[in-house]
Amino acid sequence: MIANIPDDTYYNNPSRSLLNFIRDMFMLSFYTRGTNTIDFMMMKKSNMKKGRLEFERTKTMNRRMDRAFTSIKLEPEALEIIYKYPGDGDRLLCIGDRFSSERSFRTAIRQGMIALRDYIDYQEMSFYSARHSWATIARNDIGADIDDVAKGLNHASALPITDIYIKPDWGRIDELNRRVIDFVLYERLNK
Image (cartoon, rainbow, N blue to C red; front, side):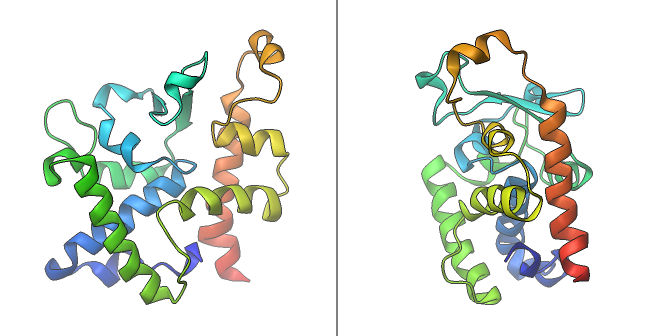
């Protein structure tokens, strides 16, 4: 499904600039292991540190001891989109500049996703499909360990006490993410 999303040139038309933006946000979510819309809207430039995107997931931060902290290596594909849509002031992305609220952003995303799914003829596609696709490809196509997939999605560990003693190894997840991106952009297209 992800490989069928049209590239930038399909929507590179002023009348389709919103669709181009939606497509890019969807791909940015995929490249960042399924990051949610609210997290994109809340991100500050200070969340970018040494080639990484570091933040606490808004959805689960108040329910976990680690405040749902995640660290994502920014691959070139993700950086290209981030630099394409810079935010004003301390905002990382221009989402807050383009949309008055998270609700209006989600509405635009929902409407844009309808247009995208009509184009690729995949009616079950939603913005959350980026997250589901990343996990499915990581596990089923790449053969990643289920614990690494869970860590990549920033799911709480099934062994929270053990996690207290183990320093997170983001390098393993970075390698997995690169493999997932390569599979979609290069390997799958060549099959």
